[in-house]
Length: 144
Image 1: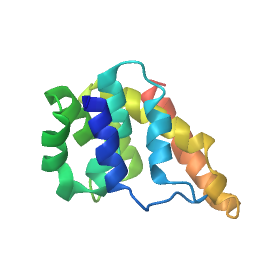
Image 2: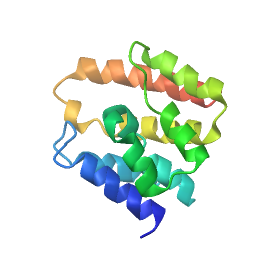
Image 3: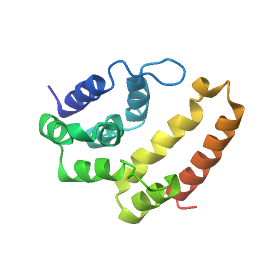
């Protein structure tokens, strides 16, 4: 089994039964983000980008199972938002790290979130709030 297949398997097990606002399995979001990349390392980080934040207790198991590189571990740690930080502080931490892999993956994560808000249709105010936040974060990650 390739490392990418292992990360997909691990992420699928973590998010088993979890759904997004529109009822689609959460893993679909992770796969869409992964598909934006061509190289295996970026795909591994992309498909697992929410694992550390949502399931911190599984970090060591994931690292061992997938065989993550130091660069991949660094990117995944940066992609986990720390408690007590605002969203823009979280984005700034990624930017200030200079970790291009984390920056690339976060941009695609935000892009996917901005283009898939079906689950929020009933709440236009929340859509506006999220789009404003995501648009600002995306611009910062683009260096604007």
